[in-house]
Amino acid sequence: MSYDTPSFDVEFVEGTSALVSGEAREARTAFYDAVADGIASGDAAIVIATNDSPEHVVSALRERTTVDADRLAIVDATGEGEDGVVDGVTVRAVGSTGDLTGVSLAFAKQLQLLEDRQVADRVRVGLDTVSTLLMYAEVQTVFRFLHVFTSRLGSTDLLGLFTLTPDMHDEKDVNTVRTLFDTETRVDGGEISLRGTGYE
Amino acid sequence: MSDDGAVVLVVEDEQPLLDMYVRWLGSRHEVRAATTEAAADEAFDESVDVVLLDREIPGTSGGELLTEFRNRPGRCRVAMVTGVEPDFDIIDMGFDDYLTKPVTSEQLTDAVARLLRRDEVAAMTRRLFSLARKRSVLQASKPSDELGQSDEFARLEREIERLRNEIDASLERIDSSEMVSLVREFEAETDEPTDAGGGPG
Image (cartoon, rainbow over all chains, first blue to last red; front, side, top):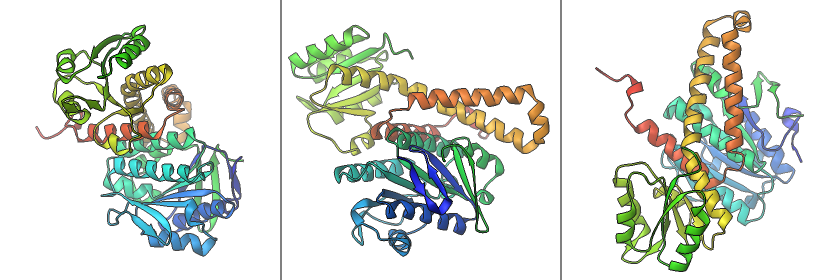
C-alpha cells in the first residue's frame, strides 16, 4: 500500500525516497506536514533531526496531528542532545552531526524499537536536513551514506523524506546528490511541484 | 574479489560445529579451521578474506582476537558468530557483521558472500559518485541543448543508470547491520590519506 501524502497531493510508492527541496524553513514545514500525514493515517515515523531539538520535533508534529508516542522515534543528530524520552517519545542521540555511522546506528536501533513494538510495517523516515550533513561531512561520504541509507529504506518498503536547501550549496553538489533520489518535491512560495518517479 | 575460491578462516571451539561449518563452506571456498586462539593465530595470514569468529574462544575473547586480526597486514572481513542476540554496537566494535547461533547452512554461506561483496559495493558507490559528479560539472558548465547532442554525455548518463541499477540489485535486501558497516567503511575511507586528495607537495 502506498504512502498517501495529502499535503503534497500525492501517493508515494513503497520504498521510495523523496527529496524535499526548497528554502530551509519552507522545506522543513513541508517535511513535517508529510510526516504528520503519515502519523494521522496510522503510520509510524522516525525523524532524524540535525537542527531541531527532540522537543521541537514532537511539538511540530503535535501541532499538526495526534501523535501516538509509541509510533514515533527520534534521532537527535544535532550533536547536542542525549539519549532519553521526550514527551513519551524515545530519543537516540548522535555525538556529532557529521558522524554518519552514528546516525546509521541510531536509526537502526530506532527501527528495531518500532519492530519490537510491532508497528514497523509502515514507517516514514524523515531526515531534516541533508544540507547540514553536507556542511559537516565530505560530499562523497554524504552521497554514499544516502545511497545505502535509502537502499535500506527500500529493502523494507519504508518511505524516506529528505530535506535539502539547494541555495546553501554548490550547484554541482546538489545535482550530484539528486542522482540518488527518484522523486523530488520542490516547495517554492507555497507552490509544491513534483518531479521524477516513485509517486502516483 | 570473486565469491568463489575465497579463503575463509573459521574459529569455533566446539568441534562438531566447526566440522559442520567447514563442510558447508568447503565446496565453494578454501576453509581453514581453528578451535583455539593459538590455532587461529597460526592459520591467519594475508590471504584470509573472511574470518568467522565465535564469541567465546577459551583463553581470549572474540574482541581481542579481532583486534589482533585488525593489526595484522592484509585486509579481511570479520563476522562474529554469537550465541546471544547482540546489539548493533557490535558493528561499532569493528566487526563487519554478526550471526546469531544457531546458524543454518544458508545463513552462513550468505553471510560469507555478503562480506566478500562488500568491497565491490563500496567500490561501486565510489565510482557512481565520481560519475554523478562528472555529470553535475558538465551540467553546470554547458548549455543543456549542447549536452543533449553529445554522445559522450549520453554515454555518461547510461553508465550512471547502469551502475545505479547494479548497486540497487546488490543492496536490494540490505539489512541494518550491513548498512551500518558500509557507512562506517565510507567514513574510514574518507579519513584515510589518499593520493587522489592532492595534498600539499
